[in-house]
Image (tube, rainbow, N blue to C red):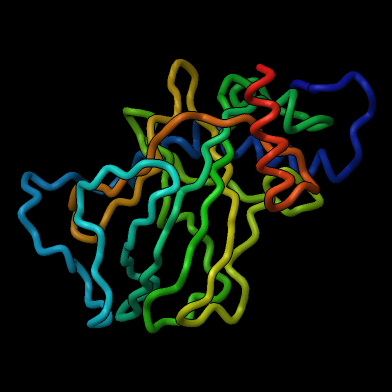
Length: 233
């Protein structure tokens, strides 16, 4: 194991490190296996799953800019369809040294690049999505593979904790979430991808990378701080 600090690491960090170790090459293989098979054609109706009459899904294959809303549908369980309006607001490239201080990281994981993806979602369907994580909804595309997100508590990773949707999360409810992705060496996060049901072309979000927001800052103050940091760089 490689330690990012020479000082002793608390037991919690050691426990979390075990989770990080599992996010190396083995998880990458699992993510590759889970990658949906691309369809030979994209001539399919926009409503690839049953959704409420007043909902229009974003057409498969659509490329969206950061800050732009897309509406997607997915099967949460058999015969249970979830529908979310998703806005990928920021993609932040970071490092283990900067955002994971005190963590023990194995060599395979340390070779990867961490990214934080901040999203806003609104339930526009009829299914209560309370407790849902977006691990089977939003993937990181590195140009070759789709990578699933990794989740940590606020105590483990205050800068980007992966809380699930609050319960209940009925129609009209909104929440802001943060996703953690580890991208393989020599690759970078090309876009955030939603692969629709049936192997249709993905709905994607991409745009200029941002610096990591400091934890504890919210709303307009956080935005102003981030803008100041970017201008100073």
